[in-house]
Amino acid sequence: MPSIAPGLVEPVLRASADPLAAELLARLRADAEEPLRARATRPYSRREALRIYRHKAAKGDRPGVRTDGYPALLAALGDALGSEVIVHGVTFADTVYLVFTDPERTHCVGVLRKLLLDRSEGR
Image (spheres, helix red, strand yellow):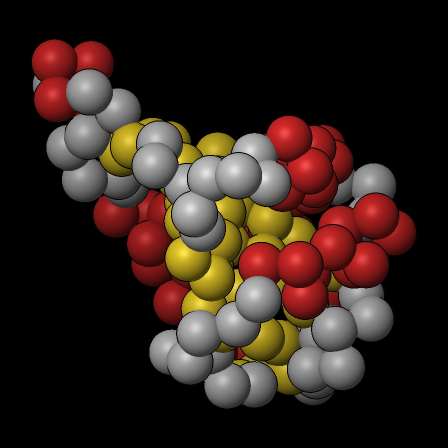
């Protein structure tokens, strides 16, 4: 996954009604001093994204991680199987956000939040 500027996803986050998008946007603004890592996939089909993330949701989280947002994301991916998505990963020290957009980055399809829990909380 190539690195990107975290701000690249801000316009689609502002236009999204997803509460996780609003949360990420607030964190991007508040944590401007925190060094962030952001990456993006190449475009791939919603059908493939739906298959992958349906499988990940069914498998469940690994120890030390809690993922939020699967129901809304899976519903959105299932709405238009013919188009493509890009997945943008924005990494903070305690959380990784996966932002799904169209290839032009004009529409936010959905957001997943992966909370990195303390090992004692994740067990």
